[in-house]
Length: 400
Image (cartoon, rainbow, N blue to C red; front, side, top):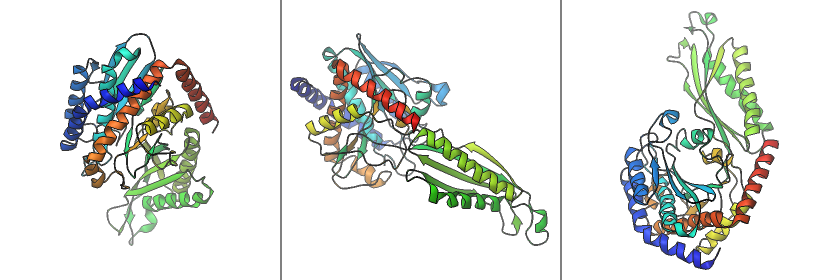
């Protein structure tokens, strides 16, 4: 990119920074849980309308089942379409311990900056409000509905710590089930032979999962808790419930693991003369389709903005951004907001979003996203390279 354009982007971002800081602080002060981000979404959509965006709000309310998502668009001539994703839901009892107040404001800051720089590019700029990331992430349903189909880029940044930013965040596919076992109730002493213990079946199910672990590949994780195992020790329980989550590094392996999980449950039910049912506990979250040219360009832009940059860490969690990444070239860099390592989903991370260094990271991150979008809009060769790499990466995922 031309240094002159990058300098202009930096100046524009700094001009809009006070509004973004005010937004981040407002989200911090009034944290709203997944599905109920009413004040947060209204505040953000008002800012976008004032900047010249056409706003659809609520967006996909019927499909999502709640009305706190939005889609804003700035139609700016013929050219690629690209989307900034905005998160703004908080955690129960913690507030914005995942930093959504800060990196949600970061996406908005990039959007405001690009709107002011519309004479410098041609194309369609979308800003997608994606609530409920901490629960049934809205991006899952949005991806299924085709919201991101045909986009040249979908991007956001995520809050991080430790002094080193990363050019992307790798994630695992995730599936969640509520597994219920049904047996027959009986007195545990007077007539145990009349019972069929649903709890025993549930325990054996978990035992069978454990027996399979030594043959799992390193990316596979299976975790479960017993939600209901009976009401009294002297009554053989006729019902037991387990909430189970399992993760893999590809959608294909997720289906293979699903078969294993069901075999273990059915085997336990058969051995204990019980029945078993599976109910989805969450929508499926998918792994990340990584696009090498996007990561390289992002790393260069992060370094140019003054960030220390490291390669993406091995995937240890899941995000609904993964679902988007199967629909269009997608990236989610991690921006360090504090030199001290701080765990996500903690009150310490929540408080760190208000530090001066976090606000500086807010500005630098918005610079990076603004310049990345300008590169997608203005560099046809780069845009084509990204699209080709995306298609090849999707193909490799299907073979995994």
